[in-house]
Length: 233
Image (cartoon, rainbow, N blue to C red):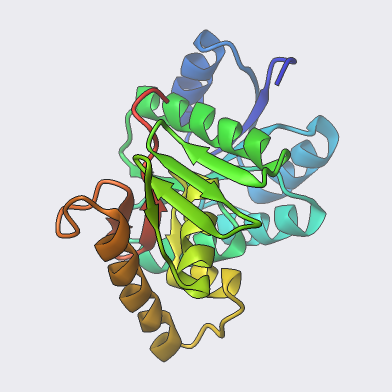
């Protein structure tokens, strides 16, 4: 991304907005701000930000409805800010298409790092590759359904390959079980969602040096799974 990325910060707490804006501007980003849902949507449509940092507890229109509206309009990356008690909202937000979330209170330095990581993933998704590489160890040849981990060929079923390639294409992004089901054309009923856990267990058994202590396919407790970002990210 050659141009300076523009970040829209949406929160009704002025102190948080100032803090996040200062850290983002220090990090080289252009920053737009909004303090309520309607203003956020207007600013997103006129300012065309590269990423939105979105609090869920907003006046006017809450963050989940803002997320729905943003997703109807396009695919701008979204990082949600949630309270620790908003577990169900967090899940709904991810299902609606949010790219990441952070719980309050949060580290502004970590938030800036998350912004950079999500922007990198979004850029990579605009250039979908037939071969997915994550770090030096992981390579997936999508047309051939070929997986190599540290040079070792791994045999996966079609479903296992679809799940692994979905995760590996966006390292660091959290996927709920329902989203992984969607990737394999499943139906998001809970009984089927639990089948994802069985597939993940099989994938780990095949690709992880120590399946009980996974280093590639990681669990995000209460939410779903993510593929580990390589150390040099």
